[in-house]
Image: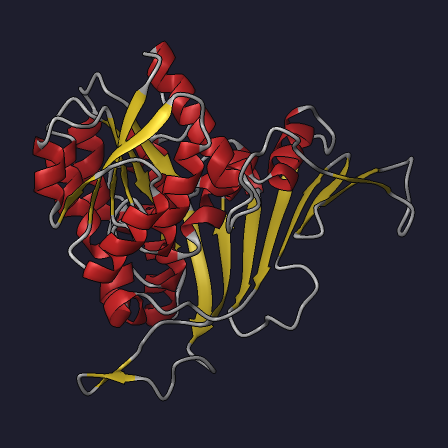
Length: 362
């Protein structure tokens, strides 16, 4: 199809970003938006340059017949219900992360998406950040040899304010290690090329939101953690998360070490470093800036959302499989859920405790 008609469910901050990125794709038009919040509906309507149909519920948008594809950007805890309705249609779907707040609900989505002809795509767009994509390509090209260790550090600012403060409670988000860190667990799986066997984590709420109460209940979202993810063949990955560390130079630092070398990417410095054992030494590795001239909209995620939308539209037009699947979405949530359980129970968690039929999805 030359033109793709988009519907956007959820037009808060990220919904507006998806509108801006979708509209930058050739042949894309936003024909409908839906959000129960008046302020969000107004923001979504203002972001669309053409007349757009506005709905207060996702059901109205789905039943309107105005869309070929729908982008789901509603609060995390609504994803399961809305995806249940969306996946019963022939609409192409791009759902924001996390796919759902629990592994159990993710399994429902995997089952519902299994026999669809339309695309079901999960918005784990960190794969598309140019320095991350460059790192993955170097690893796949053999720059480090056999991958042995993956390290991801995110040192950043606290969670932003959302409509109704829904993101202040783990029951609504899935917990910090699901809500935010599903991106990083997905990258670990992508880089190692496999799925984990166990998870061990330590974390807490040390600084942020300690004095925030809503209807008499204090916010309970974690603001820091270390997570170790173990893979087959003695390969391991680690996440270092701190959400009161905005006084930093790079928000994300990714490192992959193999038996032949090491690759690092730094964001937003947008630098890639490559070192080869026997050729380079400490302080003397190759370094280069990473850019992608094809990016038309930088947005809040360094152009990754735009590149994701380009691929989503290309898949729709050419009948291709999604590059980021519901199984990818499932695993990213399962690791986060296992990490939260590990913190609560102060022990390693075998992945089958969270995902009993894990071998069916490896």
